[in-house]
Image: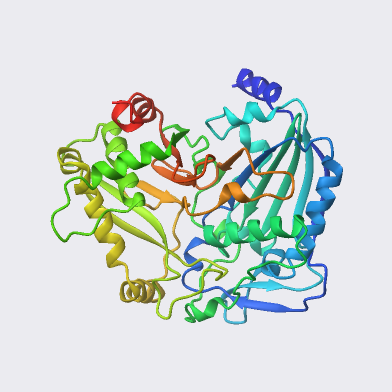
Length: 449
Protein backbone atom coordinates (compact mmCIF):
# COMPACT_ATOMS: atom_id res chain seq x y z
CA UNK A 1 0.00 0.00 0.00
CA UNK A 2 2.87 2.35 0.90
CA UNK A 3 4.45 1.64 -2.48
CA UNK A 4 1.19 2.52 -4.20
CA UNK A 5 0.96 5.79 -2.28
CA UNK A 6 4.53 6.79 -3.07
CA UNK A 7 3.94 5.98 -6.73
CA UNK A 8 0.76 8.06 -6.64
CA UNK A 9 2.62 10.98 -5.07
CA UNK A 10 5.23 10.88 -7.82
CA UNK A 11 2.53 10.81 -10.43
CA UNK A 12 0.45 13.69 -9.08
CA UNK A 13 1.97 16.26 -6.76
CA UNK A 14 -0.47 19.07 -6.04
CA UNK A 15 0.50 22.14 -4.02
CA UNK A 16 -2.14 24.51 -2.65
CA UNK A 17 -1.27 28.13 -3.48
CA UNK A 18 -4.22 30.03 -2.00
CA UNK A 19 -7.74 29.67 -0.65
CA UNK A 20 -10.35 32.40 -0.88
CA UNK A 21 -14.11 32.83 -0.80
CA UNK A 22 -16.11 34.60 -3.48
CA UNK A 23 -19.49 36.30 -2.98
CA UNK A 24 -21.83 38.15 -5.34
CA UNK A 25 -20.35 41.54 -6.24
CA UNK A 26 -23.48 43.44 -5.33
CA UNK A 27 -25.45 43.28 -2.08
CA UNK A 28 -28.26 40.71 -2.28
CA UNK A 29 -29.58 40.86 1.28
CA UNK A 30 -31.20 37.98 3.15
CA UNK A 31 -32.78 35.33 0.90
CA UNK A 32 -34.39 32.01 1.81
CA UNK A 33 -35.72 29.29 -0.47
CA UNK A 34 -37.39 26.12 0.79
CA UNK A 35 -36.08 22.86 -0.62
CA UNK A 36 -38.85 20.79 -2.14
CA UNK A 37 -39.65 17.12 -2.65
CA UNK A 38 -37.41 16.92 -5.72
CA UNK A 39 -34.42 18.17 -3.68
CA UNK A 40 -34.76 16.52 -0.29
CA UNK A 41 -34.04 12.87 -1.19
CA UNK A 42 -30.48 13.87 -2.15
CA UNK A 43 -29.35 15.39 1.16
CA UNK A 44 -27.43 12.19 1.97
CA UNK A 45 -25.79 11.90 -1.45
CA UNK A 46 -22.30 13.29 -1.83
CA UNK A 47 -21.31 16.56 -3.48
CA UNK A 48 -21.52 16.24 -7.26
CA UNK A 49 -18.00 16.59 -8.68
CA UNK A 50 -17.03 17.70 -12.18
CA UNK A 51 -13.56 18.15 -13.67
CA UNK A 52 -12.83 20.19 -16.78
CA UNK A 53 -9.31 20.04 -18.24
CA UNK A 54 -8.06 22.87 -20.45
CA UNK A 55 -4.88 23.10 -22.50
CA UNK A 56 -2.56 26.00 -23.22
CA UNK A 57 -3.41 28.61 -20.56
CA UNK A 58 -0.72 27.85 -17.99
CA UNK A 59 1.46 30.92 -18.70
CA UNK A 60 -1.21 33.34 -17.49
CA UNK A 61 -2.40 31.20 -14.58
CA UNK A 62 -2.52 33.98 -11.97
CA UNK A 63 -4.39 36.30 -14.36
CA UNK A 64 -6.80 33.52 -15.28
CA UNK A 65 -7.55 32.78 -11.61
CA UNK A 66 -8.40 36.45 -11.04
CA UNK A 67 -10.50 36.56 -14.21
CA UNK A 68 -12.44 33.50 -13.07
CA UNK A 69 -12.99 35.00 -9.62
CA UNK A 70 -14.21 38.27 -11.16
CA UNK A 71 -16.61 36.36 -13.40
CA UNK A 72 -17.78 34.30 -10.44
CA UNK A 73 -18.61 37.48 -8.48
CA UNK A 74 -20.86 38.61 -11.33
CA UNK A 75 -22.56 35.30 -12.13
CA UNK A 76 -23.31 34.73 -8.44
CA UNK A 77 -25.49 37.84 -8.50
CA UNK A 78 -27.98 35.64 -10.35
CA UNK A 79 -26.97 32.24 -8.93
CA UNK A 80 -26.63 33.55 -5.36
CA UNK A 81 -28.01 30.33 -3.86
CA UNK A 82 -24.67 28.67 -4.69
CA UNK A 83 -22.98 31.23 -2.42
CA UNK A 84 -25.23 30.34 0.51
CA UNK A 85 -25.64 27.48 2.96
CA UNK A 86 -28.20 24.86 3.83
CA UNK A 87 -30.39 25.76 6.78
CA UNK A 88 -33.67 24.91 8.43
CA UNK A 89 -36.70 27.03 9.21
CA UNK A 90 -38.54 27.09 12.54
CA UNK A 91 -40.44 23.93 11.57
CA UNK A 92 -37.29 21.99 10.69
CA UNK A 93 -37.82 22.18 6.91
CA UNK A 94 -34.57 22.37 4.91
CA UNK A 95 -33.93 25.45 2.83
CA UNK A 96 -31.18 27.34 1.02
CA UNK A 97 -30.18 30.46 2.90
CA UNK A 98 -28.14 33.37 1.61
CA UNK A 99 -26.98 36.48 3.42
CA UNK A 100 -24.34 39.01 2.47
CA UNK A 101 -22.22 38.13 5.51
CA UNK A 102 -21.86 34.46 4.49
CA UNK A 103 -18.49 33.24 3.19
CA UNK A 104 -19.65 32.43 -0.34
CA UNK A 105 -18.04 30.00 -2.79
CA UNK A 106 -14.74 28.38 -1.81
CA UNK A 107 -12.01 28.87 -4.45
CA UNK A 108 -8.64 27.13 -4.14
CA UNK A 109 -5.72 27.85 -6.46
CA UNK A 110 -3.19 25.01 -6.71
CA UNK A 111 -0.33 23.78 -8.87
CA UNK A 112 0.62 20.37 -10.25
CA UNK A 113 3.31 21.60 -12.59
CA UNK A 114 4.81 18.16 -13.08
CA UNK A 115 1.56 16.93 -14.62
CA UNK A 116 0.67 17.42 -18.27
CA UNK A 117 -2.79 17.54 -19.80
CA UNK A 118 -1.95 14.38 -21.74
CA UNK A 119 -1.31 12.52 -18.45
CA UNK A 120 -4.88 13.25 -17.38
CA UNK A 121 -6.46 12.48 -20.74
CA UNK A 122 -5.22 8.89 -20.65
CA UNK A 123 -6.35 8.37 -17.05
CA UNK A 124 -9.36 6.05 -17.08
CA UNK A 125 -9.99 5.88 -13.33
CA UNK A 126 -10.62 8.63 -10.80
CA UNK A 127 -7.91 7.87 -8.22
CA UNK A 128 -5.32 10.16 -9.80
CA UNK A 129 -7.94 12.85 -10.38
CA UNK A 130 -8.96 13.09 -6.71
CA UNK A 131 -6.26 15.66 -6.01
CA UNK A 132 -7.84 17.97 -8.59
CA UNK A 133 -11.45 17.99 -7.38
CA UNK A 134 -12.56 19.31 -3.97
CA UNK A 135 -14.88 17.76 -1.37
CA UNK A 136 -14.11 14.12 -1.93
CA UNK A 137 -16.35 12.01 0.31
CA UNK A 138 -18.30 15.04 1.61
CA UNK A 139 -22.04 14.59 2.15
CA UNK A 140 -24.50 17.18 0.86
CA UNK A 141 -25.84 17.44 4.40
CA UNK A 142 -22.56 19.10 5.35
CA UNK A 143 -23.78 22.11 3.39
CA UNK A 144 -25.21 23.17 6.75
CA UNK A 145 -21.73 24.43 7.57
CA UNK A 146 -19.77 24.25 4.28
CA UNK A 147 -20.05 26.23 1.03
CA UNK A 148 -22.54 24.79 -1.46
CA UNK A 149 -19.99 25.16 -4.25
CA UNK A 150 -16.23 24.60 -4.03
CA UNK A 151 -13.85 25.20 -6.95
CA UNK A 152 -10.22 24.15 -7.32
CA UNK A 153 -8.14 25.71 -10.11
CA UNK A 154 -4.94 23.73 -10.65
CA UNK A 155 -2.07 24.89 -12.83
CA UNK A 156 -0.71 22.06 -14.97
CA UNK A 157 2.53 21.94 -16.91
CA UNK A 158 0.68 22.86 -20.10
CA UNK A 159 -2.84 23.76 -19.03
CA UNK A 160 -5.40 24.11 -16.25
CA UNK A 161 -7.70 21.74 -14.39
CA UNK A 162 -10.96 23.11 -13.02
CA UNK A 163 -12.49 20.88 -10.35
CA UNK A 164 -15.95 21.79 -9.06
CA UNK A 165 -18.01 20.26 -6.26
CA UNK A 166 -21.72 21.17 -6.23
CA UNK A 167 -24.09 20.39 -3.38
CA UNK A 168 -26.50 17.95 -5.04
CA UNK A 169 -29.26 18.78 -2.54
CA UNK A 170 -29.78 22.13 -4.26
CA UNK A 171 -29.25 21.44 -7.97
CA UNK A 172 -29.20 18.76 -10.65
CA UNK A 173 -27.15 18.32 -13.82
CA UNK A 174 -29.24 20.68 -15.95
CA UNK A 175 -28.77 23.48 -13.40
CA UNK A 176 -25.09 22.62 -12.95
CA UNK A 177 -24.27 23.07 -16.62
CA UNK A 178 -26.55 26.13 -16.90
CA UNK A 179 -24.41 27.72 -14.17
CA UNK A 180 -21.12 26.64 -15.77
CA UNK A 181 -22.08 27.98 -19.20
CA UNK A 182 -23.29 31.25 -17.63
CA UNK A 183 -20.03 31.68 -15.70
CA UNK A 184 -18.08 31.05 -18.91
CA UNK A 185 -20.27 33.55 -20.78
CA UNK A 186 -19.39 36.30 -18.27
CA UNK A 187 -15.68 35.44 -18.44
CA UNK A 188 -15.78 35.75 -22.24
CA UNK A 189 -16.87 39.38 -21.83
CA UNK A 190 -20.67 39.40 -21.58
CA UNK A 191 -22.05 42.08 -19.27
CA UNK A 192 -24.87 39.81 -18.14
CA UNK A 193 -25.90 36.21 -18.66
CA UNK A 194 -28.25 35.41 -21.52
CA UNK A 195 -30.51 33.05 -19.51
CA UNK A 196 -30.99 33.93 -15.81
CA UNK A 197 -31.96 31.06 -13.49
CA UNK A 198 -35.59 30.54 -12.45
CA UNK A 199 -35.19 30.42 -8.66
CA UNK A 200 -38.76 29.79 -7.47
CA UNK A 201 -38.41 26.06 -6.79
CA UNK A 202 -41.67 25.93 -4.79
CA UNK A 203 -43.50 26.50 -8.09
CA UNK A 204 -42.61 22.90 -8.97
CA UNK A 205 -43.68 21.51 -5.58
CA UNK A 206 -44.70 23.40 -2.46
CA UNK A 207 -45.21 20.64 0.09
CA UNK A 208 -43.33 21.23 3.32
CA UNK A 209 -41.53 18.08 4.49
CA UNK A 210 -39.59 17.92 7.75
CA UNK A 211 -36.59 15.59 7.82
CA UNK A 212 -35.07 14.52 11.12
CA UNK A 213 -31.50 15.15 10.05
CA UNK A 214 -29.38 17.90 11.53
CA UNK A 215 -25.74 16.87 11.52
CA UNK A 216 -23.71 14.71 9.10
CA UNK A 217 -23.40 12.05 11.81
CA UNK A 218 -27.18 11.64 11.70
CA UNK A 219 -27.11 10.70 8.02
CA UNK A 220 -27.30 7.10 6.78
CA UNK A 221 -24.14 5.23 7.67
CA UNK A 222 -21.97 5.55 4.63
CA UNK A 223 -18.65 7.28 4.80
CA UNK A 224 -16.11 8.20 2.16
CA UNK A 225 -14.92 4.61 2.16
CA UNK A 226 -18.33 3.37 1.03
CA UNK A 227 -18.23 5.73 -1.92
CA UNK A 228 -16.60 3.14 -4.14
CA UNK A 229 -13.24 4.08 -2.62
CA UNK A 230 -12.05 1.12 -0.63
CA UNK A 231 -14.91 -0.22 1.46
CA UNK A 232 -13.85 -3.78 2.28
CA UNK A 233 -17.43 -5.08 2.17
CA UNK A 234 -17.91 -4.01 -1.45
CA UNK A 235 -16.07 -5.47 -4.45
CA UNK A 236 -13.38 -3.16 -5.84
CA UNK A 237 -14.51 -0.99 -8.73
CA UNK A 238 -12.80 0.35 -11.81
CA UNK A 239 -13.81 3.21 -14.04
CA UNK A 240 -13.45 3.36 -17.79
CA UNK A 241 -14.52 5.74 -20.55
CA UNK A 242 -15.82 4.22 -23.76
CA UNK A 243 -16.02 6.66 -26.66
CA UNK A 244 -18.69 6.02 -29.28
CA UNK A 245 -18.30 7.94 -32.53
CA UNK A 246 -21.19 9.33 -34.54
CA UNK A 247 -21.09 6.33 -36.87
CA UNK A 248 -21.08 3.88 -33.95
CA UNK A 249 -24.06 5.65 -32.36
CA UNK A 250 -25.88 5.61 -35.69
CA UNK A 251 -25.21 1.87 -36.08
CA UNK A 252 -26.45 1.12 -32.57
CA UNK A 253 -29.62 3.14 -33.11
CA UNK A 254 -30.21 1.64 -36.54
CA UNK A 255 -29.84 -1.91 -35.24
CA UNK A 256 -32.29 -1.35 -32.36
CA UNK A 257 -34.82 0.20 -34.76
CA UNK A 258 -34.38 -2.35 -37.57
CA UNK A 259 -37.34 -4.57 -36.65
CA UNK A 260 -40.00 -2.10 -35.56
CA UNK A 261 -43.56 -3.29 -35.94
CA UNK A 262 -46.02 -1.09 -37.82
CA UNK A 263 -47.12 1.92 -35.82
CA UNK A 264 -44.61 1.45 -33.02
CA UNK A 265 -42.63 4.45 -31.85
CA UNK A 266 -38.96 4.52 -32.88
CA UNK A 267 -36.38 4.20 -30.13
CA UNK A 268 -34.38 7.32 -29.31
CA UNK A 269 -30.59 7.54 -29.28
CA UNK A 270 -30.69 7.41 -25.49
CA UNK A 271 -32.90 4.31 -25.41
CA UNK A 272 -30.78 2.60 -28.07
CA UNK A 273 -27.44 3.28 -26.40
CA UNK A 274 -28.86 2.44 -22.96
CA UNK A 275 -30.01 -1.02 -23.98
CA UNK A 276 -26.67 -1.57 -25.78
CA UNK A 277 -24.83 -0.88 -22.50
CA UNK A 278 -27.39 -2.72 -20.33
CA UNK A 279 -27.07 -5.92 -22.34
CA UNK A 280 -23.27 -5.73 -22.44
CA UNK A 281 -22.92 -5.10 -18.70
CA UNK A 282 -25.31 -7.98 -17.99
CA UNK A 283 -23.18 -10.28 -20.17
CA UNK A 284 -20.03 -9.11 -18.43
CA UNK A 285 -21.47 -9.77 -14.98
CA UNK A 286 -22.28 -13.36 -15.97
CA UNK A 287 -25.57 -13.30 -14.10
CA UNK A 288 -27.79 -16.36 -13.80
CA UNK A 289 -30.75 -16.34 -16.21
CA UNK A 290 -33.19 -15.88 -13.33
CA UNK A 291 -31.26 -12.98 -11.74
CA UNK A 292 -33.06 -9.65 -11.93
CA UNK A 293 -31.21 -6.73 -13.45
CA UNK A 294 -32.47 -3.17 -12.93
CA UNK A 295 -32.12 -0.22 -15.29
CA UNK A 296 -32.35 3.21 -13.65
CA UNK A 297 -32.33 6.62 -15.27
CA UNK A 298 -32.28 9.94 -13.45
CA UNK A 299 -34.73 11.71 -15.74
CA UNK A 300 -35.30 15.45 -16.13
CA UNK A 301 -38.89 16.27 -15.16
CA UNK A 302 -39.00 19.95 -16.16
CA UNK A 303 -41.30 19.26 -19.10
CA UNK A 304 -43.07 16.35 -17.40
CA UNK A 305 -44.54 18.17 -14.40
CA UNK A 306 -47.87 20.00 -14.60
CA UNK A 307 -47.55 22.89 -15.13
CA UNK A 308 -44.23 22.43 -16.93
CA UNK A 309 -41.22 24.26 -15.52
CA UNK A 310 -38.81 26.29 -17.68
CA UNK A 311 -35.51 24.80 -18.81
CA UNK A 312 -33.71 27.39 -16.63
CA UNK A 313 -35.46 26.15 -13.45
CA UNK A 314 -32.70 26.11 -10.83
CA UNK A 315 -32.74 23.15 -8.46
CA UNK A 316 -33.32 19.43 -8.66
CA UNK A 317 -36.14 18.50 -10.98
CA UNK A 318 -35.22 14.88 -11.59
CA UNK A 319 -36.70 11.53 -10.68
CA UNK A 320 -35.06 8.13 -10.65
CA UNK A 321 -37.09 5.92 -12.99
CA UNK A 322 -36.65 2.20 -12.35
CA UNK A 323 -37.39 -0.77 -14.55
CA UNK A 324 -35.97 -4.26 -14.88
CA UNK A 325 -36.18 -7.80 -16.17
CA UNK A 326 -34.53 -11.19 -15.78
CA UNK A 327 -30.96 -11.33 -17.11
CA UNK A 328 -31.80 -14.38 -19.22
CA UNK A 329 -34.69 -12.58 -20.94
CA UNK A 330 -32.62 -9.46 -21.61
CA UNK A 331 -29.81 -11.45 -23.24
CA UNK A 332 -31.97 -13.97 -25.10
CA UNK A 333 -33.86 -11.24 -26.95
CA UNK A 334 -32.65 -8.74 -29.55
CA UNK A 335 -31.80 -5.23 -28.31
CA UNK A 336 -35.26 -3.82 -29.05
CA UNK A 337 -36.57 -5.93 -26.14
CA UNK A 338 -34.53 -3.96 -23.59
CA UNK A 339 -35.14 -0.70 -25.43
CA UNK A 340 -38.91 -1.27 -25.25
CA UNK A 341 -38.71 -1.84 -21.48
CA UNK A 342 -36.77 1.41 -21.05
CA UNK A 343 -39.04 3.34 -23.42
CA UNK A 344 -42.18 2.15 -21.64
CA UNK A 345 -40.85 3.12 -18.19
CA UNK A 346 -39.79 6.58 -19.33
CA UNK A 347 -43.03 7.33 -21.17
CA UNK A 348 -45.13 6.14 -18.22
CA UNK A 349 -43.46 8.68 -15.95
CA UNK A 350 -45.86 11.52 -16.72
CA UNK A 351 -47.16 14.28 -14.45
CA UNK A 352 -49.61 11.93 -12.70
CA UNK A 353 -46.85 9.40 -11.97
CA UNK A 354 -44.56 12.18 -10.74
CA UNK A 355 -47.26 13.55 -8.45
CA UNK A 356 -48.03 10.08 -7.09
CA UNK A 357 -44.33 9.39 -6.43
CA UNK A 358 -43.94 12.73 -4.65
CA UNK A 359 -47.05 12.24 -2.54
CA UNK A 360 -45.91 8.77 -1.52
CA UNK A 361 -42.48 10.08 -0.54
CA UNK A 362 -43.96 13.00 1.40
CA UNK A 363 -46.13 10.65 3.45
CA UNK A 364 -43.10 8.50 4.32
CA UNK A 365 -39.83 10.34 3.51
CA UNK A 366 -36.86 8.11 2.73
CA UNK A 367 -33.34 9.44 2.53
CA UNK A 368 -31.68 7.71 -0.39
CA UNK A 369 -28.17 6.47 -0.36
CA UNK A 370 -26.34 7.30 -3.54
CA UNK A 371 -26.24 3.62 -4.48
CA UNK A 372 -29.95 2.82 -3.96
CA UNK A 373 -30.44 2.20 -7.67
CA UNK A 374 -31.48 -1.46 -7.66
CA UNK A 375 -30.01 -4.95 -7.83
CA UNK A 376 -27.47 -5.71 -10.62
CA UNK A 377 -28.22 -2.25 -11.88
CA UNK A 378 -27.16 -0.02 -14.70
CA UNK A 379 -27.93 3.54 -13.58
CA UNK A 380 -27.59 6.51 -15.93
CA UNK A 381 -26.78 10.00 -14.75
CA UNK A 382 -25.81 13.09 -16.72
CA UNK A 383 -26.89 13.48 -20.34
CA UNK A 384 -25.28 13.91 -23.76
CA UNK A 385 -27.65 16.87 -24.17
CA UNK A 386 -25.48 18.88 -21.78
CA UNK A 387 -23.09 20.99 -23.88
CA UNK A 388 -20.12 20.27 -21.63
CA UNK A 389 -17.52 20.85 -24.34
CA UNK A 390 -18.88 24.33 -25.02
CA UNK A 391 -17.89 25.64 -21.58
CA UNK A 392 -15.31 28.11 -22.89
CA UNK A 393 -14.06 30.77 -20.44
CA UNK A 394 -12.10 32.59 -23.12
CA UNK A 395 -9.16 30.29 -23.75
CA UNK A 396 -10.84 27.49 -25.67
CA UNK A 397 -12.99 24.46 -25.08
CA UNK A 398 -12.06 21.75 -22.57
CA UNK A 399 -9.94 18.82 -23.68
CA UNK A 400 -11.80 16.51 -21.31
CA UNK A 401 -14.81 16.57 -18.99
CA UNK A 402 -15.03 14.00 -16.20
CA UNK A 403 -17.04 13.18 -13.10
CA UNK A 404 -15.23 12.86 -9.78
CA UNK A 405 -15.15 9.83 -7.50
CA UNK A 406 -18.20 10.79 -5.41
CA UNK A 407 -21.53 8.99 -5.90
CA UNK A 408 -20.02 6.06 -7.79
CA UNK A 409 -21.13 2.47 -7.38
CA UNK A 410 -21.20 -0.75 -9.38
CA UNK A 411 -23.16 0.02 -12.55
CA UNK A 412 -23.12 3.83 -12.37
CA UNK A 413 -22.94 5.38 -15.81
CA UNK A 414 -22.36 8.97 -16.93
CA UNK A 415 -23.20 9.94 -20.51
CA UNK A 416 -21.45 12.96 -21.97
CA UNK A 417 -21.45 14.68 -25.31
CA UNK A 418 -18.35 13.46 -27.18
CA UNK A 419 -15.56 15.97 -27.64
CA UNK A 420 -15.82 15.62 -31.41
CA UNK A 421 -19.40 16.92 -31.14
CA UNK A 422 -22.36 15.90 -33.27
CA UNK A 423 -23.93 12.64 -32.15
CA UNK A 424 -20.78 11.18 -30.56
CA UNK A 425 -21.18 10.11 -26.91
CA UNK A 426 -18.71 9.25 -24.15
CA UNK A 427 -19.81 6.55 -21.71
CA UNK A 428 -18.07 6.79 -18.33
CA UNK A 429 -18.83 3.66 -16.31
CA UNK A 430 -17.94 2.20 -12.90
CA UNK A 431 -18.01 -1.58 -12.64
CA UNK A 432 -16.69 -4.38 -10.49
CA UNK A 433 -13.17 -5.17 -11.72
CA UNK A 434 -13.81 -8.61 -13.27
CA UNK A 435 -16.94 -7.42 -15.08
CA UNK A 436 -15.13 -4.40 -16.51
CA UNK A 437 -12.32 -6.59 -17.81
CA UNK A 438 -14.89 -8.67 -19.68
CA UNK A 439 -16.63 -5.55 -21.00
CA UNK A 440 -13.33 -4.26 -22.37
CA UNK A 441 -13.02 -7.44 -24.48
CA UNK A 442 -16.64 -7.49 -25.69
CA UNK A 443 -16.33 -6.78 -29.40
CA UNK A 444 -20.10 -6.50 -29.84
CA UNK A 445 -20.21 -3.77 -27.19
CA UNK A 446 -17.16 -2.01 -28.60
CA UNK A 447 -18.74 -2.12 -32.08
CA UNK A 448 -15.82 -4.15 -33.42
CA UNK A 449 -17.85 -7.25 -34.28
